[in-house]
Every structure is written in structure tokens, then in C-alpha cells.
Image (cartoon, rainbow, N blue to C red):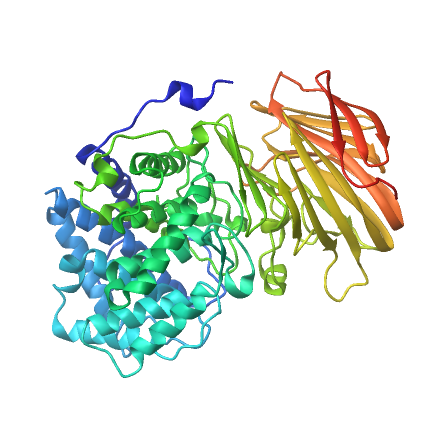
Length: 624
């Protein structure tokens, strides 16, 4: 396979680059304009409801599209493209704000309460009003401006989730202060919330997402997009704090840029994947603050590639609006807090339209992005090895923590697998069967057919071609505890895992290879199971302690890419007490199989051959 850097072709620069992003926004905006009618305070986007109620869903289906509309309006004004359609959109938005913010109106957006979803939309609402202030705010009549300010003022003193949500209060209060609606204590509250957010920083610019206890793309599109927006817009009130946020983003961006494949696909790890390309918004916000990490030409290439990646797939629902899903509609991918309007948080991925076309972000020549050359980076806070190979990006995950609330609401498998990778993606939970086993180890809950995965791994070592982590397999209020220490190596197309531990009740373990979408073949033998599709072949091989192989196939959609998948796996017999389990799995091009042979397991060494080349893998003694 040719390394993408060897065939590097730069994309557009300057005004042409700006226009490329504006055209992407235009394609997303047109279906929304078709839904605009008089008397609305929201857009009637078809799709499921969230668990937050009708009022919150209506506000979400206004505020999130409004950021997209604001960037589109500003971009068209900057390039001299505004016409009657722009005027229509502005009139519609003004009427929607008037009705939605008026408590006596039947289209009122509703009252904010503690811990309610309403607060989430306040940040993106105020961002939109700032981006296209000339169109959306300055042109409002005084009565509607006052009504909107009263609506936003509900945030004052709000009890919110102790995670990235604290930024919603910050943005709303800053908007009130900037528009003559301040009250005593607002500036102190902003500082309090920012102090709390800064306490969530761990290392190298990476934040733990508060009470969620997770690391994923929220680091980019929440912590750093919001932190850099604040530094750019309000940082002059507290220059020292603004510099801290700029410094943290400078530390963060190199490792985050590694999470994008040369195709533009992000590593599909964590929650809210239905927001798709919104993570790239951190790059133009860094540029707005003068951070030239990448440099600009490489950062712009990531943004362009990511947005273009999703534009190549049928991501629209029946009205032509963004669907809940990844590369196509897949509602089960979305968490219970998501409704039909939720995917428009992707608008943050187009924040480069808030820059001027003359900014160096656009004028610098496009340069290769990190994944267009092979490499490996270790990120301490989440316990990741980020591996770039042949244009793909992969997270080998020694950490991947999650909280009790994550376990109950979202599923820890979104953070707990051993490997996440572009161009393959993976499985969601099927339902009551429990956590999927692709690229991970799961344990069967005794007396059931439910498998449970890992929740709060502790990174013991993150090294070149090897990680070690410690965790338990089990869930609250069930008599289940399997304490595990996993060593994982990667060599060529192969991953080799050793799991040592103690099961405190009779337990069956299962470990999977990659789950391949749209399989063309699958097979199993005594120690080996394989599956293939048009691009990839994956194989799993039992080495120690596993005595069953199999291939699970879709009975209902689980895969991010498709309704159909095949997943080779190995399974143990019943284990009670100390155990040592070892297996290997591979991923390589279809038609080019790589062969792993186990020569000898003795003490703390596994001697193997990969395509005939001998390799010795050394750990602690492999004794059960």
C-alpha cells in the first residue's frame, strides 16, 4: 500500500480555500432553508426525540442550526455573495428569536431548570449571535433583543453538570455582560466556572470531562473550542487566564491532530460521534488566537479532509438534513440526550468561516497532515499510544476511563476497548447482550448470556509497540469480579494480548478481533477464526487458555458503518481463580494474509513468528 505522503496533492489556498468551506456550509444550509416557515421558533427536522422533552428539542433544533446559518451568512457577506435568500434567512431567524424567547408565546422555547439540556444550547446560541452579529443581533428590534437577553439570563446561578457544561454558563454570562444586561456577581461567576474547568486539566492539554471521567473528542470541540473562543473574545478581561488556555491548546493540538486519518475520518472513540466533523473546529479557533501548530496549512488540510470525508457518504435523512449516525443514518449510535437537531453541533467544524479569507489559515499552502506519514505518539493523560500507519490512525488504549453515570447512560465500550481505528470502526452494544468484544476482552455474567467490558482501566505502561493496563470486568450490584492485567503488543498487522488475573467466581471470557462491515467471507477452525470484506481481512488466534473460536454476525445493526458485520472471536471455558489467557488478532488487506505462528510460551516470554520472522515478547511470568 502506498504511503499517502508519497502522492501528496495540495488542496486550494487563499480565497479558494475559504470558498471551499463556505460551499460545504451551503450544502448543509439549503435543506434547512427549505424547512423555514413563518411562525416558527425552531426547524421541524424529522427524527427521534431526546429524553429532555419537546421544549428542549425545539430549542436544540434552532440553536444548533443557527450557528451553521451564522457562519454561512457571515461567509457570504465577506465574499460579497449575499442576496435575497440571506435576507429571508435573517427575517426568519429574527421572528424565531422573538417567538421562542417570549414566555407567553405558544412557540416559547421553555424555562431553564437545574441540570436541564436547555443550558447546553445557550453557548452555541450566543456564539451564533457573535459570529453574525451584523445580521442576527444588530438588526433585531429593541423589544426582541431585550426578550432574548431575559431568556439567556435564566442561566444565572444555574446548577449544571460538573464537566464541560460549565462553559455554557460562561458564554451566556459573558454575552449578558457584553450587551448591557450584567448583574452584580456575573464576572465572579465566570471566573469561578473557568477555575473549575481548569481543574479538569490533566497533562499535555488533555482534560478529563469532569464527572463523566472520560477522554475523547469533547477535549477538542468542548474544552478547547470553548476555551479558545473565550480567550479570543473575552480574554482581554483576564489576560493571564487567556494565555493559560492558549498554552493548553498549544500542548494539545499535536496529539489531537494525530487522530485524523489521511481520508479525514476521525478515530471513532467516545460519545456524541453523531456530531461527525465538529472536532476540527479547534484548528481555526487556534488560528484565531495565533497558534500555528501543525502548521496552518496542515491544520487546514485536516479540516478540509474531515468535512469532505463525511460529504462523500449519505449522511442525510429524508429531508436532506444531517441524520443521527456516522457515515449514514444510524439512530442507535446516538445517546439518549440526542434528538433530530443534535447533529448540527457539527457546525463548530466550520468555525474557520469566522476568520477572514486573508488569514494565514487560508493563505498558507496546504501541507501534509500527520497521518500522511507513519509515526507513533504517547499521550499520558488518557493512557494512549496513537499510531499512524499507511494513512490510518489508531488509538491503542491503556486508559479509557468512564464513570458510573457513563456505565448506566452511554455504555463504557465507547471508551474501554483496547484498540480504536479509522477505516474499520467497530460495534455498539447490541442491547441486553452487553458490551461488544471487538478489540477487547469481556466476561460473561454468570447465569446469563450478557457480557461486560472494562470500565476504569489504569495505565501501567505505554511504550513503543506495547501497553500494560489493569482493570476489573464486572458491574455494580452483581456478584461478579474478574481482576485483569493486560499486556498488549502490536507488530506489523498483528496484536498479541496476554491477560493475567483472578476471577472471583466462575467466569467465561471472550476476546474479539476487528468487526468488519459488509463481510464477504467468514470461517472458523479449532484455534483460528477469520472474516473479510472487500478491503480488509481480520483473524483471531487462540494462544493460551482459549478453547473455542467463533464468528458472530449481525442480528440487528451494531456497526458504525453498516447493517451487516462479522466478528471473529475466541472464548475460554469456565474460569474460577487465577488465570492466564493469550490470543492474537490481525488486520490486513484482503488477499494479503499475514501469518502468526506461536513457537513457545515459557516463563515470561512468548516466542512467535510473523511471516517467518522470529519475535520474542517478554512480560511477567505467564503462570495461571
